Amino acid sequence: MNVAAEPRAIYDSAMQSADVVIVGAGVMGASIAYHLARAGCANVAVIDQAARSGEGSTGRAAGGFRAQFDSAIGVQMSLLSREKLARFRDETGVDPGYQPVGYLFLARRQAEVDVLLQLQALQKAAGLHEARQLSPDEALALNPAVRWEIAGATFCPTDGYIRPLEILRGYTEAAQRLGVRFVFGAPCTGFDQHGETIRAVRTPDGEIAAGAVVNAAGAWAGRVAELAGVRIPVRPLRRRVAITRPTELLPPDMPMTIFVEDGFHLRVRDGRILLLWPDDPDGDPFDTSVDDAWIEQVMRFAHERLPCLRDVVLDRPACWAGLYEMSPDHHVLLGGAPGVENLYLANGSSGHGVMHSPAIGQLMAEIILEGAARTLDTHPLRPSRFDEGDPVRGNALL
Image (tube, rainbow, N blue to C red; front, side):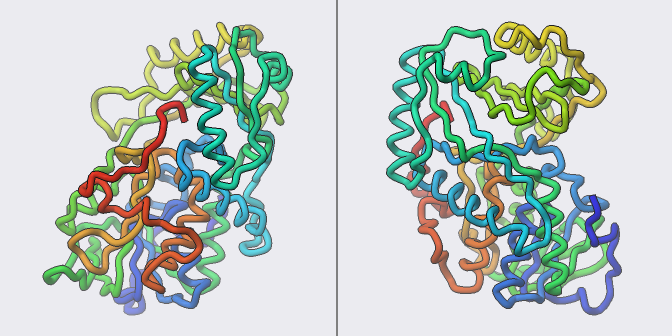
């Protein structure tokens, strides 16, 4: 990845103050920085603990994009992001790799089908009109490799795939052209805080005076928030990916195929098959290892449901894991942090951060510069909603 920001950007007097300091240079932080600069706020500094761009969770994402969500605000965030992806190349000069091959949800039981159809009605009301119900035969025709008894399915042809590192590169380079400064190898170690106001962000190399601070630290967001005396219900969750050796067994335009029963899903990327199964492992929440027991289980799913995969060889050393930043209702905390007047949160996207980063960047820029988001009503995503007993209501199937 050819991102212009070099590891350990020079820390000089120009870096000692910024109108906005963003903690986290992943796709979320880069998008926020770009949208701030595009709106006229170019005195922005982005700091990150990693040595270089793309070393965090963004570089470990599987690259899915969907608008089939379980809440109106989730659908709306995807639709806004999809509009922005259509303009991404013109705005940044980088192809985001949006490939609308669809998401195919396969339900084994009628009760699961009923839930999918209820959600489809919600999605349509929120503006997603392309999603549709499929019969079992229609669904299996979209992915003939599946050999699994199903009761029904839903499909949205405008869902599909994106390139996380290219989106990161596009936003980072475009932000830099507008004057944003990125500093790598610079973790946030604390804040100079007076009452409810942060005056500066501390790093090992010194302080950066800040008019406003954005927490875009991903899985590490809880730790950053605590440095400002703020507790947020965001925790890391390991998500593992098994990858095969190169194969032409499945077509590159195969839709993302999800088995609703247990969440096992798969896609083709760069001539290899990615196999994913979401579980909630015990142990160190920041552990990114991939254990043999998980590999064995995910391969059993694959072999049972797509028997042709029994002939595919797993590339064990290439398997990887990344960290989701989970919130209790699986939706982002977006807006001002309770108790600190100039700290803003963009945390807890729960696996949807890359796909929603175009929308979140725009909305956060509006919140910071205009006092409130104007493109979408972000009230459902306010960080105080959990203390108020008003989380976003959704369904565990999606």
